[in-house]
Length: 363
Image (cartoon, rainbow, N blue to C red; front, top):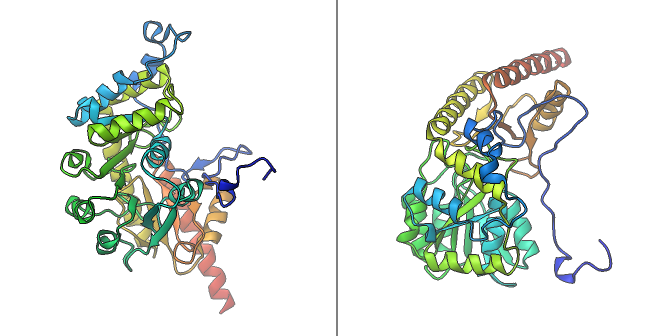
């Protein structure tokens, strides 16, 4: 770091995204992206000169058209919706608005790595609450903890979820602290907690269009909260980055929300492919969590996750592994198209056969 970096960032640990290599063509199953393009309406919106012909003008800083579209989709009021440049920015705005250096934050010990990075960046004292032995979130521990809380539901990289009743119990246990539920993967077989913000003043629910709306490259996120909390977030945004969502971004976000048929067909296809992949992996001897997301999380007794990841990479298939005592021997595999997952399973089976043959020869 340079001598000009502010001392408050001395302990900052930047997030490391999934690799994006350009040396060859890969089957990319490492970043939880959608592997098919967004709905046709997105491309129509991008080609609509009437909607996008005034790029010489600033977009609506209140983002009202997009907020209204999100509100309509979830039967909420636009005053209960905050939008931003991806859910990561929305989370950052929440941290900026409602937490100050020295405040305490709790999140699972195995979860989305950016929470740890945000805690370091914003000078928060943080507590990592261990997952239970079955990889589930320890609801009792989070209910007992009086720090601010953030975690995904379903969680990542485990793919497991907790119930609405569990979320309500955590929120009700300490009404003076915030409970932030990150629903990045909620559309792959779960139900949103969005309307629960009306019952729990301290609850904020965050979502993204990167996964189930096929818009990772557009980066659109939003949050649901009571209207005065949303007003606070909007004030922070206007003090930091008033025009954080461009007109083209809003246009394609609205278009994606309007095509409910495409959305339902895509998420249904992902869930079916995920379940098929999990079953196939178990048949090959893997231990696999029951995912409620667009990825699977698996480990095998005959090969380490790092070895399998490297062998798959040599075959042109990218996956993701997370360092750590509990996660280091597990592989996270995003769910791609049927052809992509078939290729992944074929290569995995081939690698396992070769590994087991070598082990037999060594015996």
